[in-house]
Picture: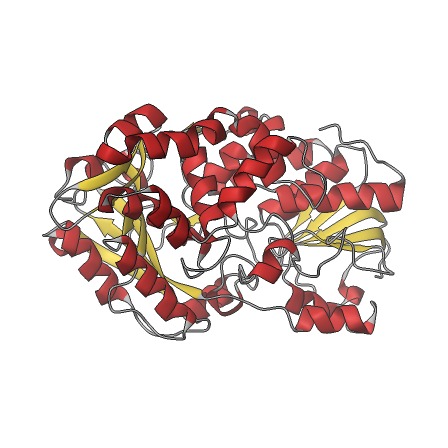
Length: 482
């Protein structure tokens, strides 16, 4: 770490976690620099015109339930810096082949009432979690420690440790209910038969019934811009076009926080940490990738089911078993013929996203890590399955295969957008099983990316926890005050 300018902390990478770490350090009047390799900041929260002029597309993250849930971001008053979250009437919907759909409303009661004989089971499962989401989220987005709300967390853990398949089959009888849960659980990008896959469905459904699944007016870049403005108000600095390949690229500083994944960090500090620890970083497992398509449309998607036309997010793939088969195939290194597809239709709720009367659409499916296969046709087939005539609305499109996602953002190794496989060992031991997983042992350096707990999402909590560790270890500041 060389140079003439001295900082208290340098953060490498400007995704939401990097910015959160920098903000947390700057809140304690420390001199902070953020270094970003690209010409623009944001990591997974960028918005660009990639199809036609005037059509704004979210490059990675599009829907923000974890932003609305984040214990740290909620304290920052980012609305004062231009961030406006828009709540779709229906957080997510799951179309089925008969023209029907399972629908998750913001209201838990309304959602349950429309699940027939599964009404009571659905309400019993989610009532306590959604009503107490403010408290549960503190533990869900927390670190390895005794929970602040042990009884609530114990109940969550009882269900969350199950596989999505087991939980769904044990509680629900109707295909609608099972499909609705599968769509949320499959965000985990792990087989739905795996232990702990249920926890992802629980978190996302509970957040839908408590804080919703909002989008950012103007695109997710507005999260980045708001956080950057706050950081600069606190005296922090941001430098773009500043790629870090070794510690020699970093100005003199007391501590470094890496918003990078383990493989990249091991390359930057090949001799600066214990050999055994570095070996574990190099052996860190990355998960499946994503194939993404963005469309400029002449009109809204003609979903057969009317509720799908009012949903912010859609989960395509049919029944629970179909989705489970698709996700299992990806983990076996295969490209599913009928993939689980995540869809966001932000321009229905945000008229800044497209010219008047036009629309944007965002979608991706899961593929094997490092895939270069073009999945456009199978994704469009899935949309046509539930919205006949969709292809007739397409003005133009932009596609990104998994390997190209890594070129866009070096943290997306092989197209893995979660910062590492959500394996059992890496759910609780990201990137290495340690009481303080953020601190790189025998150094003054830290990992603040989604490769640390609590993992992927636009919540900034990985950055917050890493900063808390650095504040305590390097500066003797141990307050949890936010």
